[in-house]
Length: 262
Ligand SMILES: Cc1cc2nc3c(=O)[nH]c(=O)nc-3n(C[C@H](O)[C@H](O)[C@H](O)COP(=O)(O)O)c2cc1C
Image (cartoon, rainbow, N blue to C red):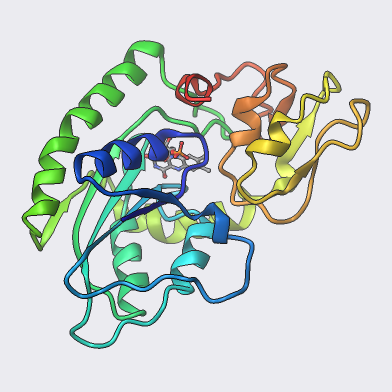
């Protein structure tokens, strides 16, 4: 099994393709994100278990962090072969260390981890934008080309594999900068609209945390407090009506991957 979270479709694509090559299933964890019940999961020691998550702010999405903290405890010496794919726009900092720590707290040993670059979906800060079409296409091609090799490594149950792009200053990015990012730049209060809502409700349907409602076109989308800042609502709006502070984002791109996969 590969358990995945995907805001805008990139990670879903990778998880689904890899699962196909491993002749297993890719399972969307969003079905469990809002419940407080124990997760209905158990993993036998002789199996391989995969996780596929995007990188948000040089770490795991907050909803994924909460999911991992709810994994069933694993008895000592009974860890399955655990592997992980981290999808990112550029680099992941120390996200793999964070993942390893969260898994270890539950008794699991992360045997192999890869990061794969996909089209960038982060647009909220100045100087951050979606990729040019050619760049996005190249990233998808390169990442998908790596999957058969990764599948082979999983089948061979390889351990000690760390094939990730940390980027420059990974400790700083996943430490102080991430804390600032989570404190000030991940909030549903950063979304606003400019009143061109056509009440199509796509933003409502796409939100993995059921955090968006559209009472009527005049009021437009309204956000609750349960947001992991995946930006799916921003990317899916056909009117480009959803804007994100601090940069406003009116002139920024939308994720073609996401739109084409819908
Ligand atoms: C809030 C947010 C923060 C992000 N932070 C990073 C980052 O730190 N490093 C990076 O390379 N990409 C970053 N990205 C880009 C995503 O990791 C990348 O586009 C990923 O493939 C999106 O996967 P998804 O479509 O499954 O959500 C970020 C995207 C979002 C929405």
